[in-house]
Image 1: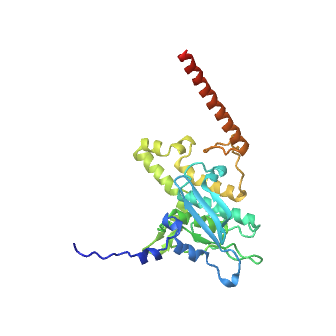
Image 2: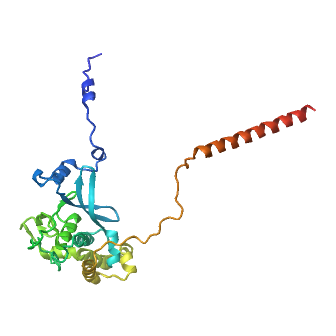
Length: 303
């Protein structure tokens, strides 16, 4: 038999270091996270805020988070499932909904810090790039965009949330190269195309195409729109009203869902010493009575 060299020796296994749990699970990019949370030493304990955007199948979650030694601290959060309160009940995960979620978070955090009147942001969304200018008294609230593991392609929904936060009055370092409507050839952002995405124009265009070509598919695909009587021509006005409603009252509302009346247990209740003792005596009495009954039956059979 030929000699086989051991590729991984005892020294390799003794020195092996297990990666962080969230790296093993494929949830966190620690190379990006380190660069986002590292703070200058001369700023001491000043929190460094991140504008975190995450997408699920049915929701969009936007948060303002700062890192500490004990763990991340969430300053404020906004989710797409809050948008029905402002009049948007359908299409809660598209580019326009991401814009609304970013706008809601920006107005909410500024109101919390009492900066909402000083920094109104871009009231009318035109699709053009917008950066907030510092006021005389307080500097604008600054945060860094945290996209997680998402692929940052041009027109990605995460940049819709970014645009909403910028128009809401937050100061986030960015470039317009990834907004919907940026042309790779001309190297310029087309504001009209971007505006169309912000107001759901791409959804309205798809609705019109389906209505003409495949009416049955339109009824199935846009069934929720159909139930609420929303047509392609109503989409832009709908988003205008949602933007105005968000600016009017961005505060978070407590859930009206009632707590469960009875707590559901998935494991056995832990008994006290007295309860365990009483249970043991009960089992012994039952066992003794059963043995006594068997002895009586045996005596009857012998007679």
